[in-house]
Figure (cartoon, rainbow, N blue to C red):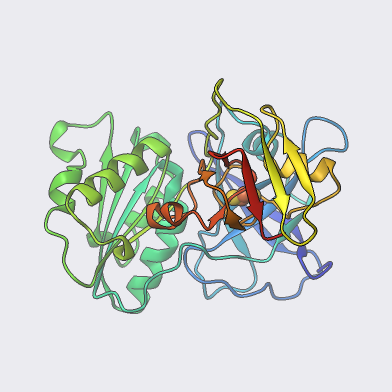
Length: 327
Ligand code: FES
């Protein structure tokens, strides 16, 4: 292992899991046990990009049994619109290679007081959901899982799920399959029950459809759990410049319309720790003391965004000419 915040891992196995999806089995480079993790955890993987010297960081959920300490398993979809992460994993990472990753972090944990769990996975969003299903199955909890993919050949972990002890709790839904097997989101989410928790992970369109339907059916926000990935940060031609004031020193930094808050602050010598830079992970979360942020993230809940007392400076902007930050 290396420093406190990163781990050196070796790619022990790289395998094609489904069309366009590879799995990577990561073991500690020094052969020791890896830090423990819980279902829903992810690691940041630091990857060399195509531009020499540049490192890109991407989050991948762990999809092996959370009791294992000898390996982490991640699944990576090759995204044709990749900004470098999935392409680097598929094309430039090989067995035997040593990578730097973070220790596991969990922003998508299981609610321990749940009486029943409804797990919905879209495409590669199955990785944390599968880990949750295995955990719930081991603890004998009540759950049901729905897994939507474009086609059988693009369905990662199909065999692992079909042969699992909990296979009878899982329904597959293929976009190219018969109408009768398609996911009926409205029916599944009808009548939210106290104690039933919903977990959803997948592409943005899938997440929006599921969360939109849940909110329309008046699911309480605390029973909704979700994790976005590969987010597109909304940029608009109408993005304007604004100013940031650092509460500790009173210093004011201008954020031009073509720069993010973290970029502008970094150029002014103020570093904020970031990871995804897409408003997904929450690493950069910063307290807002005055002003109204223009939230562009998918990390905060609608209620947390409405409170306007924190924001994600890697992608969010300001609705007021000045934001005073707790920095
Ligand atoms: Fe991930 Fe800002 S760095 S939300």
